[in-house]
Each structure stands twice: as structure tokens, then as C-alpha cells.
Length: 383
Ligand code: NAD
Ligand code: UDP
Image 1 (cartoon, rainbow, N blue to C red):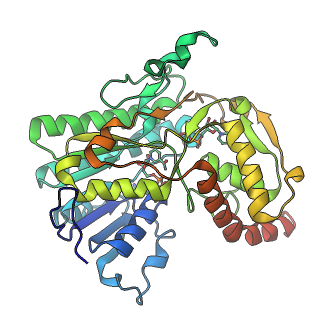
Image 2 (spheres, rainbow, N blue to C red):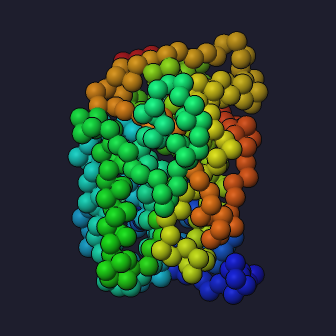
């Protein structure tokens, strides 16, 4: 079936080079592109675990997707795959906060140095680039520097994050948490500079805590036992094991959560509407889904009890210091509410799914996918 862009023009099938397409966001984007469009996708990643289900010969899209097991740090095939594509989307990154303060060099190389050749090849071959940055480039809100009960903390000018107006406020260098945000900011500036000086056509995406099925890993099941994924997977792991959910520094930090399926609709709009997306930096989040981490934990306990049949009375939370949880050099973003004016104006996109609904869909998936494996892992005697 023919597809039309927001200006009523027919969309021609594209060839898309999807770097880091084997991860959480990539897996959902591949599914959407295969199921609902006729674009071709060339996936580059070091792992295909999360997209294996799409490579079944019986799928109608079998000839429209290919996987290249490539580490972009050191593989000459990268350049040729970018050159044969119409569009490159770069998702590859180390993007779990537990790594930012403990592996700052890997974090900076992954988010800045390794992304440079991708930008360069796109500029040289005059190919469009959609680059994934992060909401973390905003860092802390200005309001966080005011006294705790100061009335200006309630004023949106002191917390709302705007692509074209808000500053990027990071902590001191010894707080290595900011290695990620700083690397992402610098690659944004490099892309912006390539556009200004050399005509690169780009779109930068700043995701605000996109969550859903297949995010990260469950420690000891499909990831290392001692690994620390992002909060959705940490809390899911605690729920599956019947352990208390750990609230870092009391769980007072605030986040807005966006359902991955809503987010992917925004990305497809960017892919298919270059004249509206080129040259733009987009916040992509759900300002209506704001909670503290304590509120998130309480909601997840309620929803998990509902979908799993486990008694709510058996589930609880516990406070832990950030130093004990993440180690030295951790710091936190206090609050992240995206201003949606630009994406709304350019692409007419708005998020749809409430936090309660997205948690229900996601925790049903976690329970179905992992509860047996966890039971087996727990029943095995430790060596
Ligand atoms: P993810 O870790 O699930 O996916 C990243 C993928 O990149 C992984 O499959 C990984 O194997 C691959 N990769 C990393 N280094 C590579 C290399 N050198 N060569 C080849 N492949 C490599 O993470 P995600 O949540 O899907 O995030 C994707 C992008 O979006 C990242 O750039 C991240 O910084 C950004 N982002 C995501 C969120 C979110 O809410 N999920 C928030 C902010 C920013
Ligand atoms: N967090 C928590 N318990 C956990 C994992 C994370 O309280 O088990 C907190 C973390 O300190 C941060 C928030 O949850 O304040 C979101 O963390 P995440 O790792 O998802 O990424 P971030 O939004 O900080 O990039």
C-alpha cells in the first residue's frame, strides 16, 4: 500500500543503514519498518539477539532486512554500507548509567569517538543522518540550584527542557556520571558544525526515558549477574525475584517515561518527512508521565501484582545510597520534562500511552518472558 508523507507526497521505499539496530530501540524500529512500510533495512550491530525473530524465511519482509555483525570501532565495511544507503540512523552507544562513572573511557569513546566516522561518511557521501543523542545533554535543571522550597522551582522557566533555549548543566569532572552527557553533547555539536560548514543533512533525537519490552537485560538471565541495567530492568528484576526494589538516594529523582511504541511512531515520522525533520533537534518524551522513582516503584509493584498474581504484600522497596549502588562518581539528573513544541509543530506528533498502561503491557511481557527462567536460576544451588 502506498504511504504518504505529512505534505501528501507519496513516500518512495528507502534503504536505511541502522547502526546499533540490534538493541532495544532498534528492535522496535525494525519491527515497525518491516510490518508497516516497504523500506529496506541494513542492520549493523555486534548482536542480533533482539531481532532474530525478524529473520524468519516465512516473513513477507525477508528480502528487506539484512544483518551485518560489525563492531563500528574497527570495520571498513561501515563506510560502504553507509554509502549504499539513502539514510543512516545511528543508535550505537554505551547508554547504561552504571557504566558512565565506572567505565568513563569506554563511554566517551562509544558516544563520541566511534560516532565520528559515521558523521564523516554521511557528510562525504551526502547522505542524511538521524543521530540518537539523549535528554541527558540537558543535565540538571536550573531550578535544582535553588533552595528546596523556593517558589521558582514551580516555574516552568526553571525546569522545562527546550531544545533551542535550555542550557546544558553538568556536574564537576570528578562526577564521572557526566562523561556520557558530555560525549553526547560534543557529537551533537560536531553534527551541527558539519551541517553549518559542510551541508550535512541531519536530525538529532533526544529520547526522554523510552521504556518497554526488550529493554536492557535481566541480570543472571540474559545479562551478567552483577550487571546494572536501567531502572525499568532493575525494578523488573527485583519484582521477578521477589526482592525489595532499590531506591537510589531515596528515589526522589523525577523522570517522564515514554512508551517505546509511541516513540517509534515519532522516529518513523522523522524518517518519512525529511523536509520537516532535517536540521532539527527533537525532544521525544511524554511530559504527562512524570513520577519520582519512589512513585514508579510503587506503581510497578501494584501493576506486577495484578499481572503476575503475586501478592502486593510480598513486594516492597528499600533505600540505598548512590555510592553503594553505582560506586564513586555517580550523580543524578533531578527532573526531566521535555518541551514538546518543536516536534509537535514540525511533525504533529504527540505521545499517547499513560504510564499505567505502558507498565501493564511491559510487566506482562517481563513476567511471561522471564518468570520461569528466574525460578530455575533461583532453584539451582549456587556453586
Ligand atoms: P541499547 O543498548 O539497547 O542499543 C544500542 C545498540 O548498539 C546495542 O545493540 C549494541 O550492541 C550496539 N552497539 C554499541 N556499540 C556498538 C559498536 N561499537 N558496534 C556495533 N554496535 C554497537 O540502547 P537503546 O536504548 O536502544 O538506545 C539506543 C540509542 O538511543 C543510544 O544512542 C542511546 O544513547 C539513545 N538513548 C536511548 C534512551 C532510551 O530511553 N532508551 C534514552 C536516551 C538516549
Ligand atoms: N534507579 C533506582 N533504582 C534502580 C535503578 C535506578 O532508584 O534500581 C534510579 C536512578 O538513580 C535514576 C533513575 O532511577 O535516578 C533512572 O535511572 P536509569 O538508569 O533508568 O537512567 P537515567 O534516567 O538516569 O538515564
